[in-house]
Image (cartoon, rainbow, N blue to C red):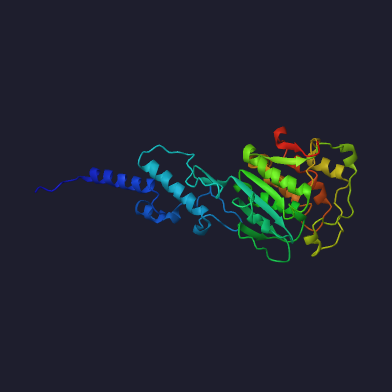
Length: 331
């Protein structure tokens, strides 16, 4: 019986068919290395910036692996002449909440939680559970957060306003599509609960910035605002720090500070409680140095008065914002 003779192109064609079949069937990642070699050579480019705490290339995170797999498939498509799908998402999974665009992976939504002494067990429940949660802890006790992708210890300065600016500065090139900023006390009273749940609900449809506050602002009355003392409303935090003393802002009153930092920009809304969501596009319309200047007002004391100025200015800080991102709670 005459044996079947196959030339090199035939072998190559069979190889292509086998690899395509394996990919289509979702064959384990390590088997794809038969074609690609070591995956560790992928996903380490300049487009994939590391978060603090480091997820890039970390197989245990689940995210670095998906970046590599996406790059492998893109590379395979290019080498074998298949059309490249730049919108391919290898992990179209609501729980992971990660979108891969081309070779750059970004989170669709990040929840940034600023914690001092609060119990964060609520993060185990809906609507928090299933999101990418990053916790910044400034309290004296370690935080337990099994649903957090990262827990970062910071010096106890500047309250939650410092935490938010710190996150923006240190992740400026790797921000999520939308970042939701929450204090650990976000469920401690009726207004905070309302703002927290509605912010998370609104971004499901809008997929952009959400600020819930009051547009009934008298800039002339607010101009002379100063604050000498303020006791945190969180009973959990009062157990650790019951001091109400504030370090005076270097520029007073509020109106002078506001004008020096934002010029003639109209203060359209005040978002008390510092619970809001911001789209990446609205953050990066200002350079990193802009946020570095703001954080310098609140990075040297536990309770700076300037933090209360920043709290009243969040909407302006990320301006210009579309009117559709502003929700008036007090109408």
